[in-house]
Amino acid sequence: MTNLVFLVPLLPLIGFLLNGLLNNKISKNLAAAIGVLSVAGSFAIAAGIFLQSFHESSASHTIQYCTWLKAGSLTIPFEFLVDHLSMLFMLIITGVGLLIHIYSAGYMHDDDGFNRFFAYLNLFMFSMLMLVLGANYVMMFVGWEGVGLCSYLLIGFWYKNQEYNSAAKKAFIMNRIGDLGFLAGMFLMFSHFGSLSFAEVFEKAKAFSTNDTAIVGITLLLFIGACGKSAQIPLFTWLPDAMAGPTPVSALIHAATMVTAGIYMIARSNVLYTLAPTTLKVILVVGVFTALLGSFIALTQKDIKKVLAYSTVSQLGYMFIALGLGNYNAAVFHVMTHAFFKALLFLGAGSVIHAMSGEQDIFKMGGLRKHLPITNITFFIATLAISGFPLLSGFFSKDEIFVAALSYSPLLWLPISILFFLTPFYMFRLYFLTFYGEYRGTQEQMDHLHESPQIMTIPLMILAVLSVVGGWINASLFNIHGLEHFLEPVFRNYTLPFSSEGNEILEYGLAAVSLVVVIYLIWLTNNVFAKKEAENLAEEDMSFLQKLSYNKFYVDELYAFLIQKPLDWISEKTYEFIEVSGIDQIVNGTGSFVGWSSNTLRKLQTGHIGFYLFAMVFGIIMILVLNFII
Image (cartoon, rainbow, N blue to C red; front, side, top):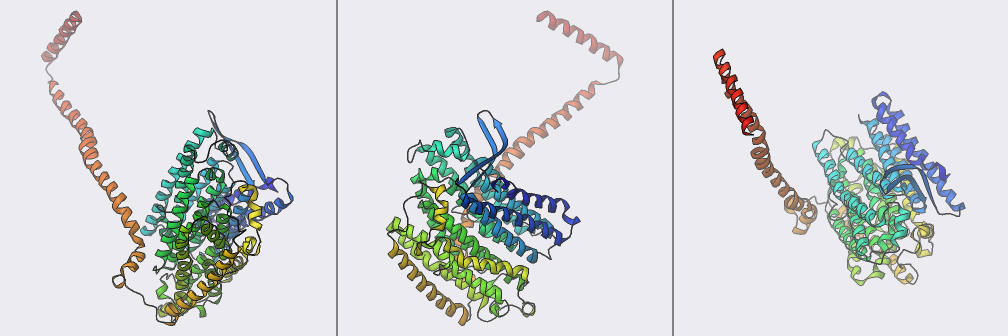
């Protein structure tokens, strides 16, 4: 079955080519069938490879197809690495991706660009699978750039809206900043290891000492790339703006797959990062601040997708906290559970927006549980899961991160405690404002309220089940370590010692506290946002802290002041003094000189033969004189 791994990315690529080339020549139903079936085929093969792995003695297979690039001492083979880490990500990408493709067939059915949308989705799936299957950093980077391109195409899918185009360009540019760090890291890596293949790099890295300057430099540069893709401080502001794309795009790219590429890259490079504790501390600090910032901003947002976007930023911060602790297992575990409940939240939000005729302001909703019963129940389950309600998937993955963090340093108790309270608060604020209380929309929207069709609700129900049971694969509270054992061949010898052993009291304590906190915040937010009239404060009526949160801590404005405006000023002055006064003057002056000299020399053409004879004789004499002198 492993020999068929090339079909996993190839089938979505074929789907992209068919939908892209045929586009308007085929029906919407056929385009959807091509898009969905290509991903379904990939998922089936990925599942077969996963099941086969339990009957194989070897945990890793490198399958080389050809030599792709060769320049001097640099050789880049076209090869795939099939091990337990890439298998897990293949299943997440194709499994969640399949459900989102099915959902999209219903959500986007009335859109004029339906076929083009499925072509872009398939191209994204191909790029993401290339990223996780590549056996060297160059192939990873090809997939890395591919998902960046697809993100640009899908965020700006409704390209007639200039605001959406600006959001797409912002995402593209910010990702390019991170990609520059990735590229520089690869250059430095090749200069020290003479290779970019995972096997060779990791083997040669073992000869380096801990915190060697070269290793720290390489890991920091790769981390910059991860910050761009996974929306960490300071390269996080593109992700909320990316909500301009259709809601299935938000679920697929900005919740379940693309934004986790940075986590995958660091987890894949665990050998290098374990040798660089200094870099891990940087990752830990960035993760803590990103998680807190995302949570604080989510508290006051009014757009249903913006709340979920900043929630994603915060959850990605959790994953980087785990990476910074060296607990790669916990980070990957949270990637998996987050894919389930966050995809469900975004698709649930899409169902709400679909029912509300495009409305996204949660203060113009309310009471929707009566009209959207399936969406309401599944959204509630996802909200419980992300809040860390005991025995749901989010609880088990967060529990591992919290236990590791609290065991690592007492300094992490404060931020962890704050995060413990913030996530349930802003998520249940969102839930109760949307589904409970009095209806606050227009009568026209009320007349069109209805539950989404089955093609949209069935993926919601499947994701809801996964959000409930998905965490039991590694329920350390009950001494279940299935995922940890599965990933052991990848992280063997490199995971820092933060096992749950010896922390049973802490784990049970966290479970009890989590239960109490979530129940209390359900009660509190229900009283504030459901039973009482929800107060939709205008910005001028907000307190200072509320304004700070509502305006996203003015990070975009700060970037505009510190970066954009100086660059605009430099551009204007460069244009004024170099382009206009320099280059243009040289070009225009050359033209003017040619015109003047031609006009002057033209006067020598008098038409008098005597003058021409005189000029000829004079020219001959000058030639003779010059010849004599020289």
